[in-house]
Image (cartoon, rainbow, N blue to C red; front, side, top):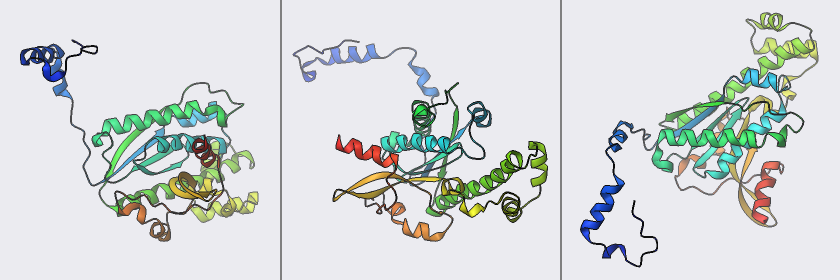
Length: 299
């Protein structure tokens, strides 16, 4: 292609036939293949949710000596990788993670990448996956990363606020179901001296109250006292924080109960306006995620 980088001629000074010649040079007989690309623009006025899931993470966790039933380092790494995504994309309203999965909820009226499904999914997935590898040593200092993890992803649209809230409730309910089972299962294996097959058979057909009873009666564990991050997962959300008499908007990690309506009443303003920027005040502890954001502001 002809370049006029150092030319003193203005574009308007070029003769019409020369402009046509430049245009034709940029074309080729092969360009017709672009017609095979499908339009994957997502419907407007709907919530976009991108959910990432670890592929073969059961093996990955075994190969990297994850603690059972929960490894706090692994959860914190997942949260930090998700935080790096939110830090880069303001169009993400909040994100929710548990175990080896993370859901990213975009603002309802986002026009990021013109709402192209493939562009959104691949960009979010690559940012999250590379951040997971990049920050591995920050949380697994003594554990060598033997091979890179893999995350698959999907894009789902939810037309109403109610649909979105039910989605978030569904994912948090899944945290409770899975964690209660895993906590009971691994205590039967690690402390009860059962084989995995025996523990699975023991828990077959049990309900939540049965598992709570096993934990309390046999292992003196009150499930209600387990860390909130294990029982509820992690919600990354933007809130206002007061530092040195200055209010700043930061991404914070909370473990609130989204199954209760009072959570959604309190955060209803987050869903109400496409230009909403007045976030709720954060009154929790100053975590590493918050410290990183504040240090960036100071520097």
